[in-house]
Length: 152
Image (cartoon, rainbow, N blue to C red; front, top):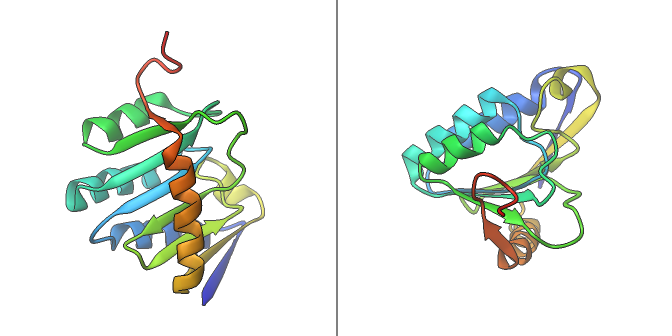
């Protein structure tokens, strides 16, 4: 089962913030963009609350504010860089073994309110497992993030 949310507008971002804010055991993600301050704050709060935030970023980390990664890491989140030669082309969050949050929504500003995007909140356990298995593949060949990236 999935519910879909569309922009321009705030519906996709509101769903992301709601799901992260309600997380009780973990948040894992595969991302190639990450500049939205509200989502960043929600992920830091989730790390403080659950102690388990694992985020994997593309090795080229385009448009990335590294200060935010350092803040997440300082809060205890595990930040990884996918070192595989191909870049990440999909973005999603996995929350509490319940939700896979995926779609064309970018975790950056001003994309969520200016451009058309879609976000699906998936609750089907089979589909969730597919996303989890994909995340695990990226996890298996990712390196811990160090600042500066890439390391010398």
